Length: 227
Image 1 (cartoon, rainbow, N blue to C red):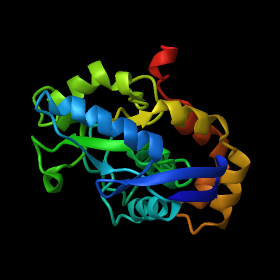
Image 2: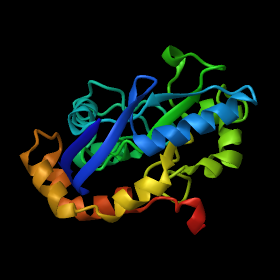
Image 3: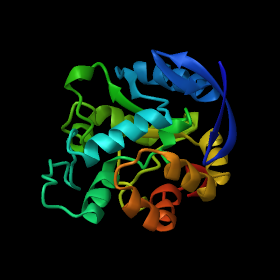
Image 4: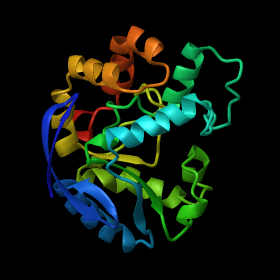
């Protein structure tokens, strides 16, 4: 399915395919299938819990968190009460774990959240760091990915000390394609999109948009071939 969209990454022509009920960029899906097959030989069942996510979906996640309709977590994955927080504080808390609409790497179809379906059911998954520690249900998956994901073109863009976003051991990016998309990011297009959107915390966001993009879009771990 060829999809053309106007985004902060310019005019994107993305060839999406269905992968286990999730839309993914075609080359990403192909590489993921190969990686999942390799992992299965070690008793690990890689499944996707989040793939392509459009702007409207990311906008709803953002607005729900800003309005207190969806749980906001702190750096330690603990729920935070927003009642007495300033707009600045709420924005920074949300962006620990959720991208500003228009900047999410899930918009590209190259980035996925994964889990080990042999060790935990999807309806039990919380996507918190403890699940991916050695003692957690996705610990074996995480260790396998550290060793082998690069063989298939995937890596972790959000790593401790290397990214503005908190470390996400469940988030993989197919860097042969995602690296090219990031190069054409256009902050002026993003500003236009957000100005026209029904975005919570818009005043705070727009006042800081350039620094937010620098910290949360460009500040990521380098792909393996650049380490």
